[in-house]
Image (tube, rainbow, N blue to C red; front, top):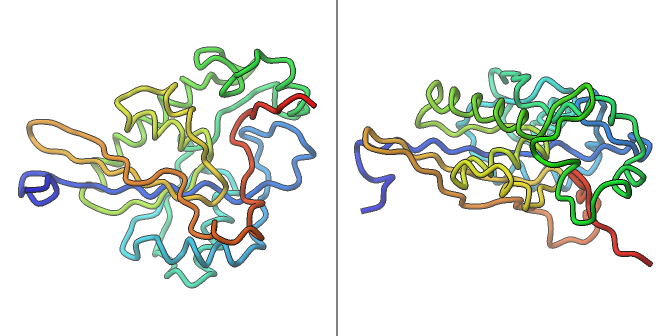
Length: 232
């Protein structure tokens, strides 16, 4: 018998959605800067609206790009929820004085093969480390797992936040979460099973892109952190 069929097991399903692409960053690192996103590709939002569960509780970060993304999903025909809770601890990593720096130049200054802006324990000057982001994301997930137990949760958040959630689901291995791509407006589902004896996570899908069969919408791929570029 499957775990979700056992009467003493509660399954809580997380549907993570990364915000829409940011086009006006000037090629710079933006981190927690409250910058707007581009929600003009209605095809993408129509596709995402079809795969999300109708009876869900909604959460987002406190940054406007997550709110704009949620609005675009609702405008695509998804029934608007009665409310959406804003969680500042689901915001992107605060990259401090790195915010506003040219992304390409910054990446070139870091060690080859870096999977994020820095080592997970290295804080940005005047900001956070990835572990800081991971720990606040984990605390928020653990709290919501209790307050919304047994429900579908749609959380509109950021690349770093979703990578942190994946690392938690992999067994509290934050650095492993950084190995995954999280594209704009992609859907990542993480299922949490809780019983009196134990808790366990399952990862049904990571970075699903319901529109991906159509190359015209490939512009949803923007890095959530550095990408290694081949030398010419």
